[in-house]
Length: 125
Image (cartoon, rainbow, N blue to C red):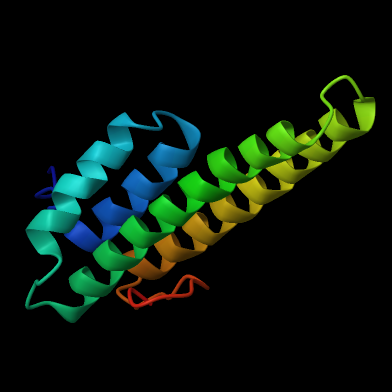
């Protein structure tokens, strides 16, 4: 006997899209997350509202941390020096790994039906 498949909650979908944005399809998953955010940002379900807002804000911050900061390092540093490349590589790998771990934690909390707060400054916290 096949069990009836459960529908994925928007909270879980938001966290999955955050991870897909970081790991598989950066841009495309962000657009899907933006659509989900616009659709559910004022949801009556508090869990959905929290996870959708948090994952969208975390994706924006992650984009800045992974694109803008390395760009500034590259613009201000001398790219002919190996030390700058080492700094860029260490920054990107450690920052990306930390963001992925936070996303996995948030996904686990969404699957458990619990709220999660990324350590983000700002109003979407």
